[in-house]
Image 1 (cartoon, rainbow, N blue to C red):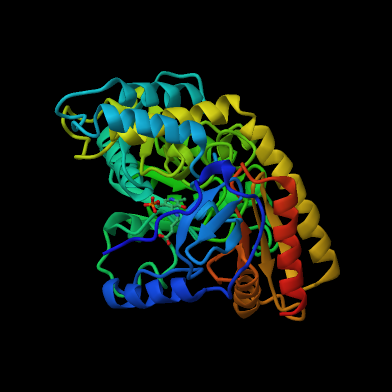
Image 2 (cartoon, rainbow, N blue to C red; image 1 turned 90 degrees about the vertical axis):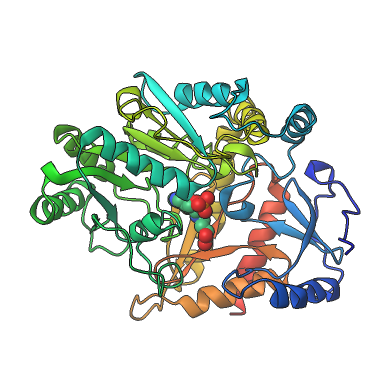
Length: 450
Ligand code: PLZ
């Protein structure tokens, strides 16, 4: 079996332009798509059915030679850039030295160095520990294990619109049935749901009122003495880029602290410069007890982490945390290079600049078209929510049409939201202004003709 090899190198060396030489998908992608249908279950979908051979800067190059603008970063993963040269060099170096030992069998310094970096960067100046895993879901599961072990309690609260993964416990924590949960139960027990602050849809509740509503429900339906943890995305990702009203997160944090409940921030999607801060909790000065990270951490390699209060992480007995691949040495080398870029490469500032461009364009589109009901987000994590202007009801069909039209024109955008009516923008921070603006122009035309 021959596999199409890249005709150009990835990384920023790739020509930074949108160029379609075939329709999307082109003939070669269609051939592979037919093979995919025969070899891969339909449960594993593809949003834009092209097959990539190289990527970098702000573009994805497909097997037919089409160059697409990337406004999704593989769902907020290649924040530092795809095939970022520093990350690639670190991966190559490490792969040539050794690829695996299993950190639980014989250690290596890279794991410890990633833990030190995360302990330093995570909010709060208390003593911290970090344990490494492979995926966001696996890290969320481990954060819950740690909270339960440390508190001796079992209940966990997650919120409306939450997304935390596809494993059994994280399906229970995730709110949306279709496609994530339908048919896959029974789910893990002792998971409870509380109302989120969703300023566009909760009738003008301010942060304090929305927190009071959630806390009352928690106190009445679960009881603080049974509750191990409150788990929350500081800005909800898959649920629709929902930014809670100011004061909501600090009020939850204060209640959790007063009641011995572990506050777990799921920063899998929001972490690592994405929102114009290293972590989204920082925007509201919230210091979570545990913070879960993944996605952007290692520039595309699978790695995730639970970072937090040393007393909580050290409450788990020796041997209680681990996994064969957790903190793989190549992923750790990639993470150290990526984290260096986040810290010293001006990427937090770059996320803010990208955010200003996104907001400027999307606010202008909203002013011109009442079918955009809301534009929200922070930094390079911004979304537009589509509605029926007469009723305010979610318009998922419109979001789907706009996204499909953008895809056909060579712009990769993603939808999200409980109601499926949100288009989200998560460009790699390595994208240039011109390409970003061109991508947004394509989306605007797509809306005009949809
Ligand atoms: N927590 C906040 O955003 C992953 C899921 C895509 P994994 N989001 C993308 C899909 O349809 O599967 C995510 C997240 C938040 C946890 C996760 C889970 O991270 O690395 O996908 O397990």
